Image 1: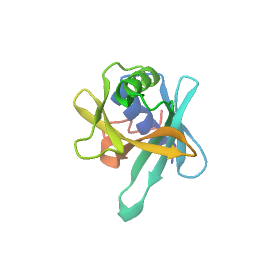
Image 2: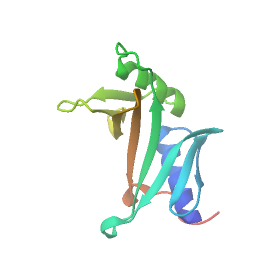
Image 3: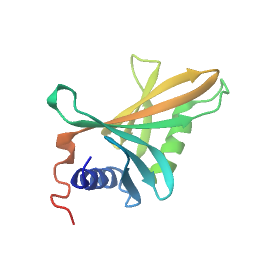
Image 4: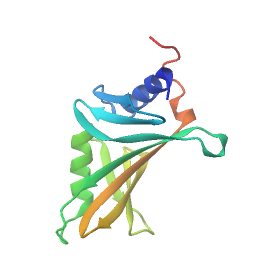
Length: 142
């Protein structure tokens, strides 16, 4: 990822979540980390398959193993707090039981997949970003 691409991704995340504290920090190769302040939220990777450049933000959310846990309110609270945006909402999927969907208002953000490994339950939040989503971001390096 080059400097211009990082600036566009920064602008995209800030606009999407309405949070000026979000920043994208490049790592080796085609990966970056996404932070809010000093809080490392997750990893951003580039996907160049099929000749189209796109990105995937992946965030791991650890939750309680308590079987009575109601994931929607817990994940609503967690994501709203992490991104500092009260408009984030998590909803169940009509025909799927292994995942949930996340929205800001009516805008689809991504999917939260349920993962159980070694008895520990977590959710993997995946936010896809298409190259065209970055249009309207910074066009030159400042």
